Image (cartoon, rainbow, N blue to C red; front, top):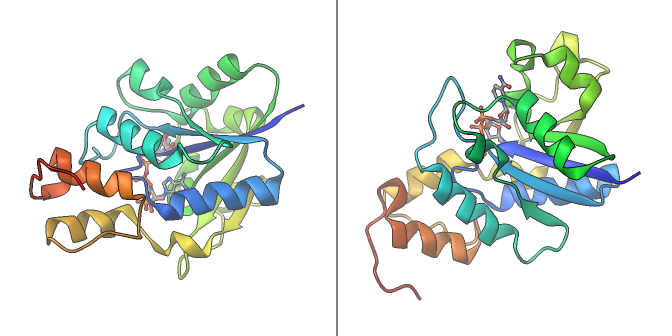
Length: 198
Ligand code: NAP
């Protein structure tokens, strides 16, 4: 049976930390492929960039790696994104396989409040990617039921990239060159609009 990772997140924007986390998960968990699933939006917060722009950036950044792909199931469904719907829909699309839902450890910390969270644990294995300096402890109810995945490169964060763009600072080498150009071309996160891309 194939082992497939689902990278859940808002990817606002996607960066090398996400790609390193997916690659580390593929190696550590023996995954055949990893599907990035950008949220439409989460109930408690709205991403700064639109869903189509975030999907486009995820597609550009993942394109060079044949193990990676992007699914728009959450965006096409519309409304707030619940991991239960992401896993249900991708499970139906992918057919019989073993699923691993990978997201940030801080997002996973709130999993006990997620829709049908106990059912979710039987539908996929949950993986919390940790950043340097952040907690590696799972919430009590998830102990022994989810996997902690340390990822040193997750020191990069989408929040810091958005801040740097807003201050006019460079983001080269934090994310893919195509994503840097797209952010400038679309004027995302307060970037100065640049018509000609290099
Ligand atoms: P988010 O803003 O995308 O991420 C929260 C934190 O986790 C940030 O520190 C983020 O770092 C990190 N992160 C996010 N995705 C990651 C990934 N795939 N690998 C490594 N680190 C990652 O949070 P969100 O929009 O709330 O959602 C995260 C995931 O949890 C989504 O798949 C969402 O559907 C799910 N979720 C589900 C429910 C529910 O079902 N009720 C509720 C909340 C969240 P960066 O900012 O650097 O990306």
